Amino acid sequence: LICNRSSQAGMVYDYDLFVIGGGSGGLAASKRAAGYGKKVAVADFVKPSPAGTTWGLGGTCVNVGCIPKKLMHTSALMGEAQADAHGLGWETQASHDWQKMVSSVNNYIKSLNWGQKKGPEVQERDVLQQVCNFC
Image (cartoon, rainbow, N blue to C red):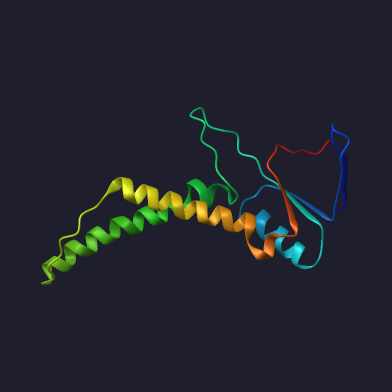
């Protein structure tokens, strides 16, 4: 696929692969194509929520779905395991800090976003943070 498109500013885009969506599928396809030496662009845009929330590359799963849910679930399992351990003779005194957990989850997600933008295997892609469609 070659996408030649002139923007309003007179720029011409020429890519071997133009991916709409920076979720896991779009990123995997773009990495693979770039690895084969193809000129690749990924268009990814998230409309801000009414509160102004946006997120980075990785799609719904990485940013607000599967990954944060699993990290929070793991945190909950740690508390349950601690209670079970106490019943088996372990002396445990740990407590949970909700704000620290949320901050840790957010920082982990940001590290994944950063890796998708700056990792060594993605330097051959253009990432366009804008709405794209085919005319």
